[in-house]
Length: 379
Image 1 (tube, helix red, strand yellow):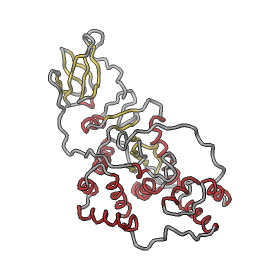
Image 2 (image 1 turned 180 degrees about the horizontal axis):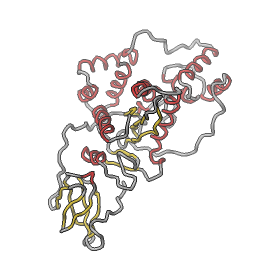
Image 3 (image 1 turned 90 degrees about the vertical axis):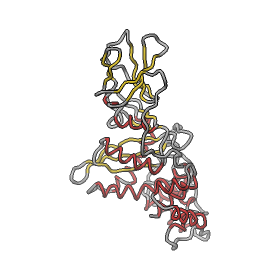
């Protein structure tokens, strides 16, 4: 598949992991990977696709022809505006590309767009490097023709806006999410942290951030971070991605017939989003793939048990509780069967319970009933 080869070569170019490791993640032999890479170095994208291609550089085009080119891009991508179309054409190698404002006037003259919206004046926060933080969320579901819901799982790199996973799911259960994330981790490596909201399967609405899924994150060395309750702006990049997905894919059909049909549309659109569609917040001609590189931390097929420091009081969680100092203390059902460590704090009679290096609750011997669950601290 052309887009898979293109992504492979760009990730090789981005660095971050060895060539052999990248070949393993893409499921290709090294000689095949070297063949793709050699063709990429010699001919660029043309070397990975069919040889018959339209020339990039056509300086003799007239103004009418340029207008037709602009309108052709708009017809292929009906929600792209002037800046995105200009960035796309510049990336394709066209030299005589009008300004974004001129493209906007062309589209309005052809009745392909309405009047421009007033830009919003704010600067979103972003992490400094790829894989420092991934944002993950389920998009609001929509029904198939037979009424079954489609739950769309999206995973986005905060720094680059690179989409790492886009799946049309029949449910939002932990096994479904875990299966998709394992495939994503094997392909791109592990992030430092994952940001998600407080709903199932990565949180509980009543304020407990630890679930079987987030405990699994901790086992992999990934820090789970939860957004503030009723504050979707925290995961604003993922929310904006969902809006783009609505406009460019989901809303292009009056109805969808099956989950595979939706997934096929996602699979065809995802390379456009990552590799061809300029992202306004990144720059005029910059696409997410320009700023993304795979993580140097591969997915471990075997997870080592926790190794706590000397002096820790180790207890195994049994159905959400531990026995300690003659009492049964509530820890959380997500930790069932897991060893936790109890360590004293600087405050007399106060102890912190850790899972790996994560503090998961505080025990107050003198002022707190042992079966009372304290508010869980948020990351």
